[in-house]
Image (cartoon, rainbow, N blue to C red):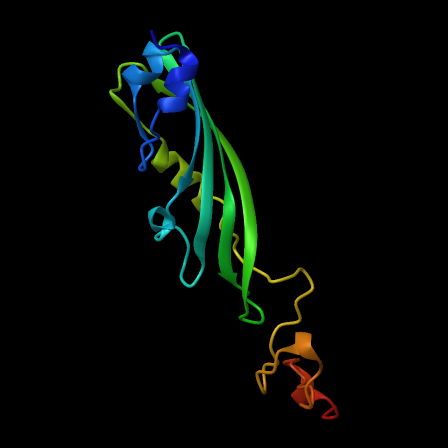
Length: 164
């Protein structure tokens, strides 16, 4: 006779995170975790930004005519700084909670994980909050020190100075 512990220990988490509703209902829930292949997230971020490592931890439980799914996805992504153009590694750690009807045959968690990660894309990635960026004239990385360029007056009214 198999016990719940035997089921959890022997349960093969589907690589694409598509779970059979019957497996979850038959065992009164499911707890599992898995490493995820970065290929599943290639289209989430604007290149050259990409997921390099990802893991997921999931918990399913029946709740009346629904199955509740709580999850956590965490890992690392490589991103390019929008100011200095350096590649840098950032960690992420996100949680989600969703309900699914028991009438559905398959519960597709991968789409939920992808949506969760897509919402984490920043408008502007920075290697550090005080990144100085590149010199607009010579292109030197100002985080490494000042350049020898003369600062340009960027004011649109600079031409009028001294005319009146």
